[in-house]
Image (tube, rainbow over all chains, first blue to last red; front, side, top):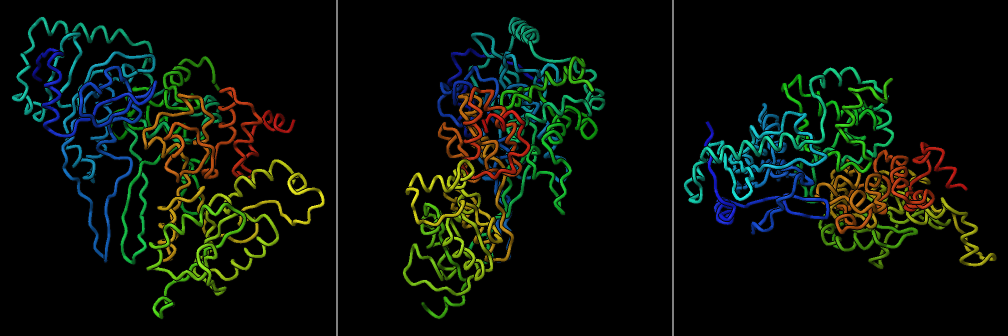
Length: 343
Length: 262
């Protein structure tokens, strides 16, 4: 069984300093009235404790938006290797931990992506509990409890933190944390009480049981056309998604004769060029084709390949869509309930 | 000119009607190009220019008068690759956008008087008149893209130029969305990337200076800006001000067309 401890919030500064001694610490900070972002910090006071969702999910630390994969010069190819800089990612909520778990599955699947794994293996993930807002629906996606993707997990018990240790990397930090005391029965009661309260705090969501059948059956529902007409094809829904992993590869030639680099950059299935192939044929030519494809990929597409869904219910797409068409919960409810948009 | 340099590929940098922004970017980067090319013609930067054939001609500015057109045809006939650089050359820029709004003769009369002898054409991008091999938009062009396009052409590779929207660069910069959070009339969703989402990164709305992205959803963009309270006529003017061609608006819902024409 995973070990559990308790420490007082008054000791958080020294806890943070220990994390800092391991490597660069990144945590959510406030970047605007409504938005947060994971940024490298030096002072624990910078942490935005009320951050529920950052603009970009923590995948960016292991799968950077833009990354040079190799360089070539005079006929020699040199593959880029990670600098093995150790990173600590602090304050990752359960939905994002599940997101990282799904990304691990995808990037570990053969042929393994060494660029991702090198960085992932040089990191420590510290999870953090959270109370849902009106956009959170991890409960419906079965991702509301942290079961993977973290080394340490903190649950907020008012004056204390309840610390769970999941991995050997997490255990290795313990000797440096004198502020910890083993969790006693009373602490465990407080812990259980927190998670019971949280379970009841959700106001958003849907009944997930028939999701798979619904997504299959409602493929031709006219709701898709209504959403497609509003879709800007701006692609905002994909970089913000904790599990969107599609990228574009670009060879950048240098002016000197035989020199250049190969760069991968996040791409989006919402762009018209994404499914454009030789002969100028496009198998997802209109916004509705692309939007529908993305919805299915998130809610059903991975059932066959990995027996899991790739939506973790974080609500990022809902708040990041300028057209307001990525309200996944409303879309699923409409498809299930057939109140409107029925053929 | 030393003997060796005559063996280098030749380039020409020419200008039609534009602000010379592209010429400045190319001039700033000329030291990087000089080891690899001979500059046969660059009237903006050198006095000795020759009219001979070139491997690559970079042309900025739109075709806005008969002289521009004559010059462009001459450049086309002597160039292996014709590269339109900058929004003016690729889309027609603000002078093209103005022509979409009002008659050239009216503009001429308003500015130079009704008895003006100046000859003008409706301002258009290069590809309306001649075959253009590569279109590199920008206002002004991005240095990295310019060097990469040149490098590709020197190696006979097809250059890669992104036509994805500004939103991608903006999100990759992890900027708060000004369209959502500030209700600014940001055109990032329909504008081609390349600038690095410069304006939204500074908290300002994108005004579309790079020209349209690939398959821009103009109707959805207009609908969403209209819902935010922007006047339909202002919205359409904003979308068209950097030369976005009419065919991109053919799918617009009737309501906007009617209100714009009213």
